Length: 163
Image 1 (tube, helix red, strand yellow):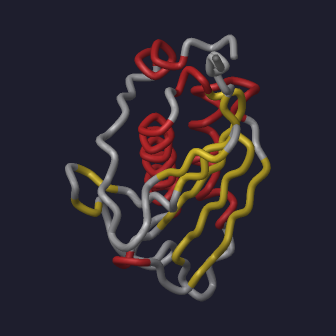
Image 2: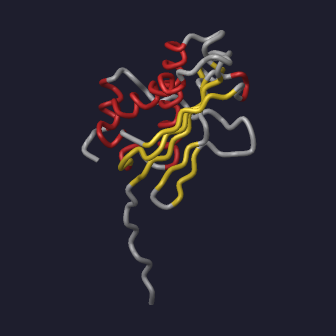
């Protein structure tokens, strides 16, 4: 990838947060072959949920878009915990879940916060396939949750010496 990811994050005024400890029986990210699968990330600030509520009721859509962006940054921290960000070849897939008021239908606009962050950081390699799903409620009453899949380059390991 031609983008210097760490420099790009700094240019955007962003820093990776600490990886949030799992809230259940799972791990934040798994490296499998040439892909990193990131568990759903919720908006956390200093280990605490940033905001609660449903979008279109207690949470304004613009605020939810910001929270979605925060989730994507947390997802990048999770990626970096198992494969350096410098090895990301491309963002493959994003799934965003939006806890929605019954008449709220702008889930795609909320999840744009995550998508736009990934393009801001990785350029064209940040463009991805995506789903934006409205749900009645999310864990811990969070307004948004974002999971991502990225492709990473695999460094060649020397073949074992056989004698």
